[in-house]
Amino acid sequence: MPQEAKEQHEDVVLNQLEAELQRSKEKLQETIEHAEISNEELRASNEEMQAINEELRSATEELETSKEELQSVNEELITVNYELKVKVEETGKANDDLNNLIASTDIATIFVDRALRIKRFTPRAADIFSIIPSDIGRSLLDITHRLDYANLAEDVSATFETLRPVEREVRSNDGRWYIVRLLPYRTTEDKIEGAVMTFFDITTRKEAEEKLRASEEWVRRVAAGRAGAEGVPLHTMAEARDEFLAVMSQELRHPLNLIYINAELLARMPAVQQSSPALRSAAIIRNAVANQARIIDDLLDMSRLHTGRLAMSCHDEDLGQISQRLIGLLRSGRETETVDLRYECPATPAVVYVDAVRIEQVLLNLLHNALRFTPAGGTATVALAVEEGEARVDVRDTGEGIAAEALPHIFDMYSLSSAAAARNKGGLGIGLALVRQIVELHGGRVDASSPGLGEGSTFTVWLPLSRTAAQPVSGEMSPLVSCVSGRNILLLDGQADAAVMFKTLLELDGGAVWLAGTPADALALLELERFDLLMADVALPGMDSHDFIREVRAMPGMATLTAIATGGVGRDKDMQAALAAGYSAHMNKPLSLDVLCGKLAGLLPPMA
View: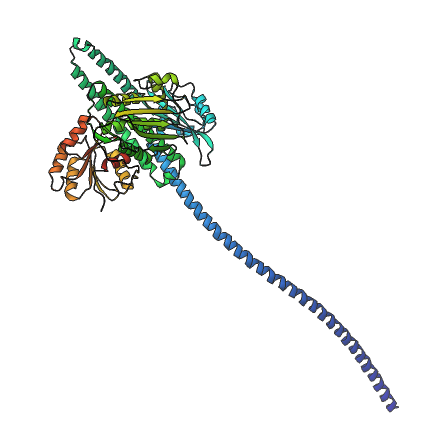
């Protein structure tokens, strides 16, 4: 029994172990299946991770590419920003130059847009219009003014419609006179975006005209014997009028000289040369000043002619060389920028017995008229010929022409036709009368012809040929070059404002300039430095200009120094007195580099 019980117990234990083993196998099987499932899931996750890794690598490459593109764009933006900064600085400088030009000019100027709203104005405009800085943007028609000018708005509208300048002489309610010029405001894209209105104060000129006319009437009365009855000798009256005109010329030329030098200086500045409106404004100012200076010269010469005081120094002169010299001078300036100036030279020389200065004055007067009355794109021609013992000069243009009824009176003093045309272009109408009288003094004659209005005109001068033979005339004109570059120049002028500006102008043209305010300063500088050129104003403080040049000539080594006297009085006796005192030449104000170079052509030796 005990054996059987033991065996039964062992069977029971064995069965329990087998059952336990079976359950362990089943658990192991389940574990293996779970492991296989986990492996599959891990394998799938690994593949997903690899795919995500590829996507991240691709995104990284795209980010690198985008970074390079951004860097390239950033570099371009830096370059563009620098260029924009440079442009802004240049624009700022040009704007500063324009603001300084507007602030310094003595000419009242207003810029308006097409709706007549104010854009800019110069300080002088406040003398005519009740205008203040806060009025910018307001309509000009809402601003009160002192002008007797009811058609102002209509004339501005006409400027917009016809694109042609309008010019009027108007009077203000305080008795002053102005030349009003209305010009279209053109942008660099050649668009008309408004108008430029300039107001030139000509009160002094008007007063001078009235005084001159009164003086002319007085001279006629003297000639008729009335002055004698009043106890005033003829020569005394003529001398008094001559002295009055000389003083008036001196007073008028100083402000003109200051304006002209400033305008020429501004026109040579690089910043202004990049601004078309600023260049146009400077050119308008220069032309206006030159016209006023010519008017003063014409008034003085007409007075001398009527009193028999116009000095003449005649010699055999080659008319071809005179013509070429004048054309070369005009071509070097701005007057021929829009008009084609031509010259026709004769096959044989045209030698005449004349005063070269007066004949130059005649030809310049005719040439200036041709250039002024010829529109842009037109032609002005100077043709010289020899015929039947006379030299003939034709000045032809394709300009406005002359009406048939005006031709017989075109050379009359203050004739309605010539005076009206001259006023429209900035003159008194006495230039052609002066031309005729100077030509007749040389034994010649002058004539004008025109097919009609809009058909151009021809002015012809005949002068008797000299009996002296002359050399053939060269048809080539040498170009004008800088005459002061590399030269040491001493400038003596008591008017500091104009002297400083002219000094700057000479330095821009390459000259080395010393400035002296008094004769004593100039003499001290002459002892310390070597100069090529001395320019001294005739109205010196503390010393007579003739005594000054005599002291200069007495200094060692100064006998051959080129010295030019400058002044506002251009009488022949003043010029002769300056030459007799020791000056090399005399030069009228306003001072111009082109005229200075013409004076120095035969005075200064060439640079080594």
